[in-house]
Image 1 (cartoon, rainbow, N blue to C red):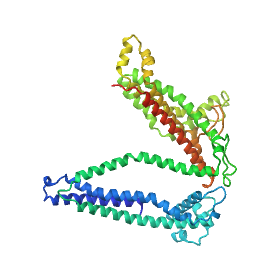
Image 2: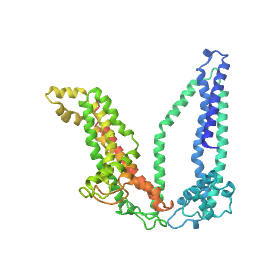
Image 3: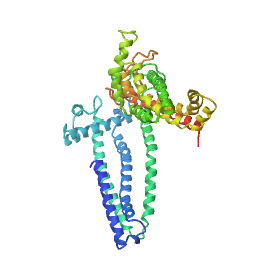
Length: 490
């Protein structure tokens, strides 16, 4: 049974429990609502909560714990001789899981029968060919130990899912019966439900923290695997990015410096476009524009933030690139060789960032008290002098924070860079040359032809970890600046 239908069954049990709990409460009070301690809906909600919450909690715990048990069992099936040089047991287990998913998808697509997928005597070369023909991502060749482990993985996963389904449904039914059993006119259902809702709200508020921890751990584990295969010093201080998709990536040079240079260079060009335009737009909207103009101009400006980045990328590729090439290319100044360049991506990314800078700066400028403006006018200052000498200094910490947030957004951009900046990893000061960024290389490394047990594929996680640390640092600095220097006005 799929996870969707299991959750649907649990929710259906909870709904039935709600109806029965409400009816049982009214029956225990002889149909008189005033004889109940709580409203009838609280009694129904108590039964529904006791049916759904423990069952869904068990489902989450089971889904988290089952992979650890399955991986431990599968790991014992893989001999040390099956782990080649330049690989590790964790990478081989990743190949096993990927092969198992490939077998599941191939069976679902009709590329092979379930009996053939489970056949212990099946030829692993034939399995590899069939999986590739079915469009499944596998390594260059599935080995015999990996195939046997993948077949065992499928059996354990299927059994675990079956027992999980039975256990979750039983817990939901038992919880509903428990709630019905304690339902009577004197039961304090409202108190119980409100405590339960409080716990649910706390759990919901913790999702963001838990999600961040999960993302971080997934990056850390795969980054550690990468640094077991590739020297950290060569990665962080290498000046050449030259991945080799042949073999296990032993001849690859995976220095991150050219990628960081391209990332910061394109982000700098984008900020050079977005900061002046966005800041001037914010000053105009906050200090000079009338209410009617502001009501129209600000929403139109913020529409830019809602345009998908792939559309910006196409705009860079089809419009901005050829336009710059016509001016700076061979028919013009002659310093630009192709439409994909730092300047192309930077200009378009800058346009995309304008709403981030303008909207945040506008809100910060409007937060400056009117009394400060009136005091400046009372001393004889003009409008422009008030803006320059009073309003901007008061709003400067918030504006700096807005710029840093826009910078972190620029550093994490992908599609504009992929389509507008090219794919060359180089160290150059020429803004009319093609360069690439960390995010673009993460995409290319995970969609290339590399073996997932090689450093060439695992480097994507090390790149992601580096990018995570950089953007997190920028966000922390921005929030620190805003909170430390923000004026608190009554």
